Amino acid sequence: MSDSMISPPLSMSRQARRAGVRSPAGGWLPALLLAALALTAVAPVKAADPAVVAASGGGGVAACASCHGAAGEGMASFPRLAGMNANYLYRQMEAIGDGSRNNPVMKPIVDALGVKGMREMADYYATLPLPAAPREVPGATSPGAGLALRGDWDRNIPGCVQCHGPRGTGVGDQFPAIAGQPAGYIVSQLKAWKDGSRKNDPLELMRHLSAQLSETEMRDVAAWFSGQSPKAAPASKESR
Image 1 (tube, rainbow, N blue to C red):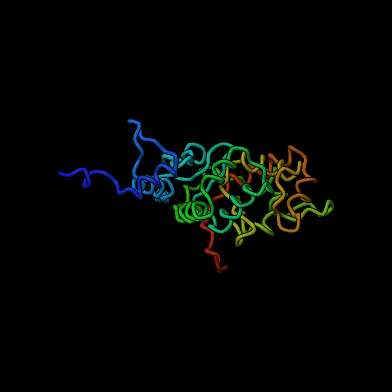
Image 2 (cartoon, rainbow, N blue to C red):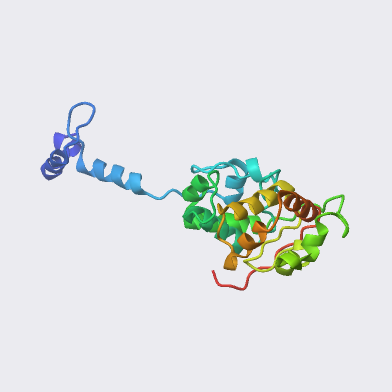
């Protein structure tokens, strides 16, 4: 084999020298190799399957299941995602990204997902089956039932179900299902509305309402909603 068959053309060698890159052996890397390396560096990485990200994480994203449960059922102070309205889930990730919903745990995850990843994860969780209904359902005379069902009009507080639907099963994209959500999560969000660390509510409704509630009332109403049977959120008719 001749030297001309294994050596880069002179013009390519000059381009490599101008690029200022040497090989480990001290010679100039061929321009075609440099071009190939550059293309490899910018080639987009195929997005991971949402189910894989949810179960195991990937691409700089922690496994969603570690906080939200293996089936998206929610745990302790982390919300249920399974069966939630997809547009609502997507908008909450947007709010975390733009800072109108302060969440230091989710912020780097949202940033790593990007717009496409957020939409895929929202759609994925919206299609998951709902968790089983709670075994014990608080009755209409439980401490939080009055606020949840009827409100307190002396303080201009409407019943929660007037916006969140019958027993808190959710209404459209703006008023999420709170039935079956972990009580700790509901309390944490009421406090976030009250202290202003969450402010992505329509017409500032939740900021006004939470400001009227004592911590005991928050716990009572959260306990009532966490004991209600969840129901699948209807698909939004709004165009994505």
